[in-house]
Image (cartoon, rainbow over all chains, first blue to last red; front, side, top):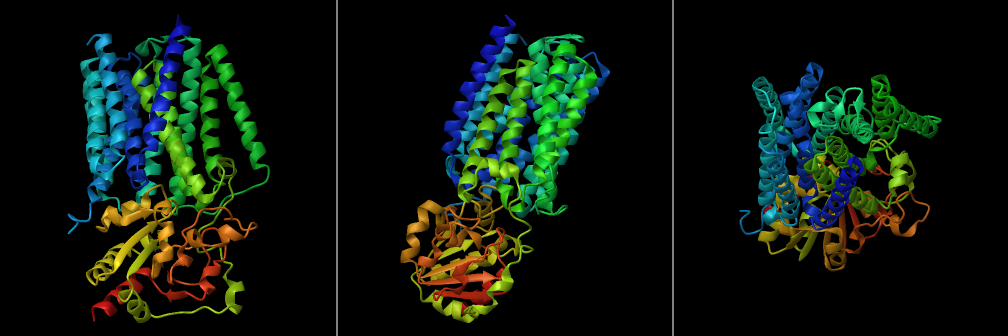
Length: 98
Length: 467
């Protein structure tokens, strides 16, 4: 049973790698910096694991570690999205640049 | 919230993240993409908060952590100057790495929270995934800290090389593998902690020998690692959203690393092994050039030639950004355009210190993005250009990359500025660039050197044209 779950997760993982591969190749090189900033923010989705630890663990040490994980991930999430927005807001076309 | 509802909610989040990356295919749709990403993240967090078994005190602690973290993150991101973007991204990567390590630890101490067994009897596959996620997270953390310190100038950008380096790294790597095996067999916490310490150490050791010139690759690689770390944790917790997101980010970072390597004609292996490039100005080979004649010009000469040109291509490099010359550069372009001169910008993929950095710096100075072109798009146009204005760039224009197979930059794609009728190089001195290679273009007949600070020189040209 556990084995088939792992294979299922692996399937999802491999397919997601392919999705990522094809989507990212279509990103225009001019926006590679925002791409990096936004993927950085998005990878902080790891926060969901930390939330569970703080909210529903019985173990004090796990809760404390989870607390710090939530804090670090939050810095990243907010920081990453704000900097991405700031960058993207600067990209303007010729006619409305004046 | 029921489990199936949570899973569907996570699926929607994952789709949002994919649409976010899709949005970045053009600047017009990019803001919408960022909104998708924010929506996906919000949904993921809210869904998790509705999970069964959450306690009231937990919510208070979570709120506290999110408020503090959100405050710090928002403030940093609002204030950071765009030239410091690479450091900031490196610092953020280190946080993802650390968060991954912490979450792996919580799953070790409190496995029942994630339904992967009980302490002392955690599923074998979970033990493996946990170690892998923690190890990659630890490497991401310490590697990013080194990258941050190098970019911020806290430690030298020069590659740090010592004897037996690769052997030491290989030994540590083998020890990590053995400790993971021991940990899986016994679930000894000591083995796990030892493994973590070694993973932190190898992160430091892997990035220290990598030189300043390879920084764009390093940042992309760490970006990729942070994704793989998230995916590893996703496997540990059996969380599909983490797995999908981690794979997306990992793939994205890997592609960027590949693009950066190709732009420098470096293989990823040689980057990882390290040793390329120093601080830039410090790698001086300039002594040998004294016997060759260089034509130095004045800003007035440049002003005269440029206002009578019909097409000018500006080639900015990182030196332009260091001198904060982007705004005066835009002014110069505006004035030239008002005189009927066609102005375009040519950007080499490694012009900045991270992928796409130069585009952001120009956008910040209000340069419209449809005047900015990538190497392949514009290279054929130099032949029809009257002036190539190279400001703060050097190695990316060096024709030795095409002709001299013994040169360290041989094979690197370059901008063919030498095909323009006149080439202006704005430089502080004759010093060579990052790669420590002399540029023969400085001595070419159609090259005029403008010595001085990039910003001052550009401002003087603007003044001379307006007068």
